[in-house]
Amino acid sequence: MQSFSPKQEAQYNLLQHYWERYEQPAFVTDDVIQVPHRFSKLQDIEIAGFFTALLAWGQRITTIKNSFRLMELMDNAPHQFILNHTPKELKALEGFVHRTFQTTDLLTLIDFLQVHYQTHQSLETAFTRYLSPDAINTEAALIGFHNLIFANPYYPTRTKKHIATPSKNSACKRLNMFLRWMVRKKANGVDFELWQNIKPHQLICPIDTHVGNIASQLGLISPSTANWQQAIALTEVLKGFSATDPVQYDFALFGLGIEQRRTGFIPQLKY
Image (cartoon, rainbow, N blue to C red; front, side, top):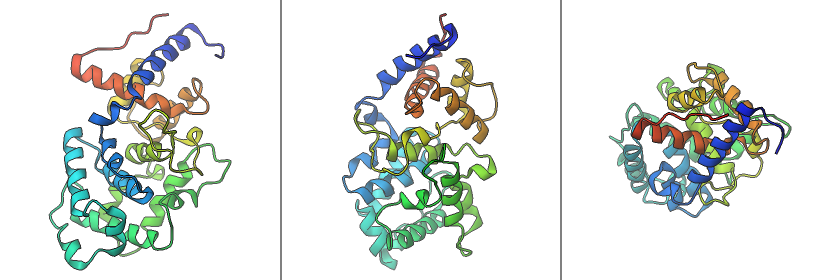
């Protein structure tokens, strides 16, 4: 292990403990990632993961319920549905709503995915076409993905708020989580390791208000609004603990946040 200050060593030990505790197969049971885990086909996992990640705000149980409902509306074969749906099958989606994500947004993204999968085997290329092999992170990929979707002038402006972009200084929490699912190694039974052209060291840690609060309590970042700059700052600190896979500590920060909301526990560093 590299040389750490006493504070850094305390941070590292705490993060390691909670990462090892939470990145376990049992994590899937209660998390939204259980939805794409119901599938085995590459494209089905991608589509289920993409929509589940977009719906992942608010209560987890509601996200899980609505994500499974959406998969049922797609006959639990999302790739086949995306490519070959009929007007009648699309009409059956009318009325699907999750918070501010409405039918219009769903149909827009289904249209985008249909066009994409007609010429591409994987959704990965919608991100990697904008990512140079030596890129330090996925910023260009996320900006390019957003711009690719909304290059279609007929897509409604309202749907843009569901496809975050660093160009608007968004933390891009849900898309960063989706990329984590697709890219990180599957050895621990949680993430999928389906995509090979984005590397774990390029990923950005998903951050929202809860994760940001935990990270600031641990002295990893300064207290601030969760935005792209905060996501970058947090990831850079985490690279000091794991240069090849900094986002592994997403599990630790998430787990600490869950415990804090459940019990009021506030992590204390001992050094």
